[in-house]
Structures are given as structure tokens and as C-alpha cells.
Length: 167
Image (tube, rainbow, N blue to C red; front, side):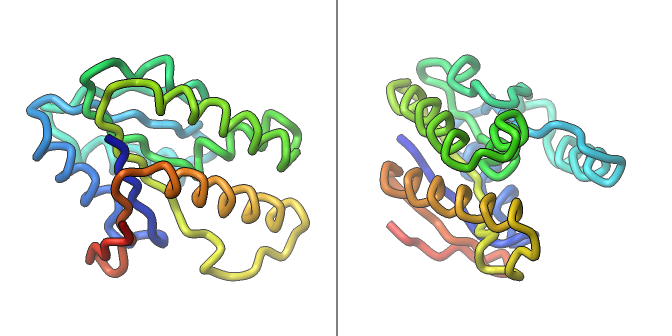
């Protein structure tokens, strides 16, 4: 089962996903895809860690998330934006290669008999990126979001802490 949860920054995606995971398992897995980019980012990561209690199994994996999701897991993948950033940076901002690599990895997780709750951001709904690199990343994010949503069993859009069912 693939759940896809998307929305803007601070829309309530993570808490919604975590509550869903806890309703499905007494020991869900939290898969963090983030690299630590700066002190502010480290503080955000720490806040997410503090939001979870001892029931959670925490795993970090920057790109190859299929390596840490196993049969019968209930796992929250947080988040697609940071996961894509890792591909984008490692390919020296090659949008098309990043999309190819992300789709290949996503295809692998579709084969795992697990409950996977995927969090993403709708970055294209915000300000227009003022750099070429930013605009290409917005395209990458939008295309991958569409790809994930297409394959998801359920999709939810978060707005102001409220879930809106997309499918």
C-alpha cells in the first residue's frame, strides 16, 4: 500500500503521516532522507526527531531507500524533496538524470510488500524560482510528485493542517 501525502511547507504533512503510521503499526519506521545542509536544517531535523517517541524505528538513507524498507514494514518516507535534492546535487544539477535515477529507485519500492507513507512538498505552488537551477529542480519535483501520485493507492493534500483526499 502506498500513501502519498503532499502539501506546502508547514501544512501538517509530517504529523498527519506519523499519526497514520501509528494507526497501522505499533512500531512504525521513520525513514529520513535528509542530509544536514546547515545549522537551521539540523534544528529542523532535531524537531522532527523530538516529535517521535520510543515506538518509532528511525533509519537514515539519502538515496537508496529500497535498501532499508522490508516486507511488512509500515514506513514513513520523509521526504521526497530532500531525497530528490540528494540526486540533484550528486548529478551536478542534471534534472533529467536525477528524475531517471529517482524513478528507478521508486520502481524498486513498488515491489516491496510494505505499507509506505511518502511525504512530499508542492514547491511549484510557491514563489517562482529566481535561478535556472531552482526552476529545473521545481520541474524535477513536480514530475516526480506526479509519478508517485499516479502509483499511490491513496493521495492526500494537506492545507493548514487539514487533509484533503485526492484519491
